[in-house]
Amino acid sequence: MRRYGDLDSAEDALQEALLAAARQWPVDGVPDDPGSWLVTVASRRLVDARRSDLARTRRELLVARLDPRETADLREDDADDSLVLLLLCCHPVLPPPAQVALTLRAVGGLTTAQIARAFLVPEATMAQRVSRAKARLRAAGARFGRPTADQLPGRLAAASHVLYLIFTEGHTTTAGPGLYDVQLAQEAIRLARLLHDRLPDVGEVAGLLALMLLTDARRSARTGPDGALVPLAEQDRTHWNRAQIKEGVALVEAALPVGPVGPYQLQAAIAAVHAEAERAEDTDWAQIAVLYEMLARIAPGPAVTLNRAVAVAMVEGPDAGLAIVDPLLRGRRAQLDQRLHAVRAHLLEMAGDTVQAREEYLLAASATTSTPEQRYLLARAARLA
Image (cartoon, rainbow, N blue to C red):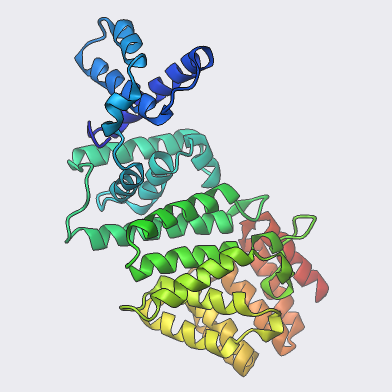
């Protein structure tokens, strides 16, 4: 992509090189530098396709015999190329859904079928989305290269948002029989780590990586042996990944004192407070409430309001939390918002209003498309019957 500038052609050439490797390496052995071999064959294959189909076989056989050390310069810095490609996939001419799809396809290496399954759309629909994204980049004249100084902040913000969306979908899938998609979550963490490695002084990139690590650290405890959802307060914290927690906390502590504080850093700080509590009852809810108040000032939204309401309720009582939540009921989509009804149900149960709490749990269960979440909500409602 760096050398020839066209994503479609680069992908096709790489597929041809992989096919040649699958045929030749089992016979002749794996080259000393497989990466250089693949890049060399792919590059020559692309040149051949652009020039002519004549003598293609002769050229490919010749390229396959080249010493990869002679063309090692083609590889340059693979990690840096991945970062440039990520920022290209998050070009402002693309809408967010297209940025997500193209990032997973071109940078994450997921197949179109895998991406389609993750986002619950037909494979043909996702293929069209990826194809249109490539066409829009081509039409816009987007080039493979580092964004300019004035372009980088906006492109970086878009890339961070895309990775956050990918991780969120992997951590709690919006629909289907499973609670999470490990592959999506791990790919988001890998790409966020790549961003942080290249931009270690950008506080929000560090905050994003920390948030992912701290959240993913709880994965093993989020479901029971039967796959049922286990809420945070009831999780066995000995199953949390302490290595990820240690890394995430260190990232937060290093980022917060430096420069402006952004929403990813604040969310990571909240996750760190949860992670450092050995028991649910040891959680510093007062600190979490303050952090959510700060988050609401710089990145307001319904999700932040709901989370802040829970934290306030844990400090000041359920009525204080309900006073924050209830104004959201006036929104047009309130009847479809599973999270809103689930939070209200929890707060009403805390307040002792089991009848209304049960109704809210049932409303939340009817609104969700996630099977584990629906089962959990129905079980909570049944317990109050």
